[in-house]
Length: 196
Image (cartoon, rainbow, N blue to C red; front, side, top):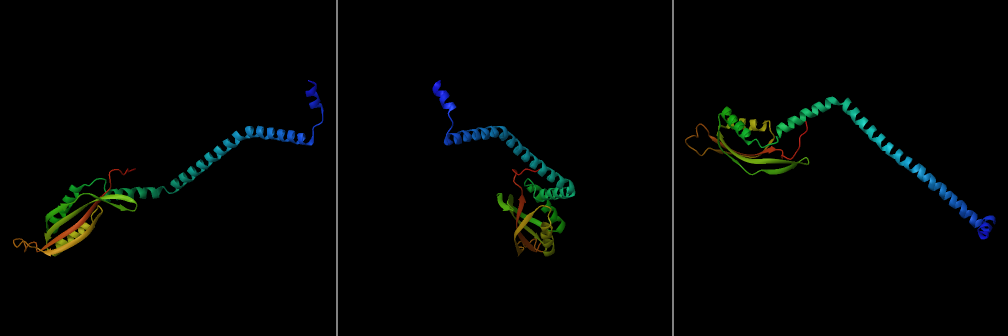
């Protein structure tokens, strides 16, 4: 006991004094850390939430101010889906071609389709079916048929045209020309999701 009392009663050296002050300062900072750290984290979280709310407010404000543009965009989106449908709908295309040929006074000799292929357009994968169509008729009716095909409501791409005189002598007077058309009919892959 006497030894302890003598240690506590004697004056501290400069080095011990500095160590005690450093220890007290460390204790103060340690206490402040545990007092203020949770509040700093809470303040940081509140700032993040405030920033998210502010960004959401700006987004909703833009949506509110430009609501007419979204209607136009929805119309364009529906138009694109009609031009590049979700399924092949080959039967609809064939019926339309038959109707065009009848309207133009031509006749379709044959239609050959190949297996489905893919193409990347504007970073979107699009399917297409290549067709080879042989149609007979007079020159003006064949031009009208091509014009009808170019203005089709669906997107298609004419890859090649070949015009020959008709080889069938029995129908040469009625259908003097034979046109071979290579065309790609586009449609969207089924895994693309649509939101309306």
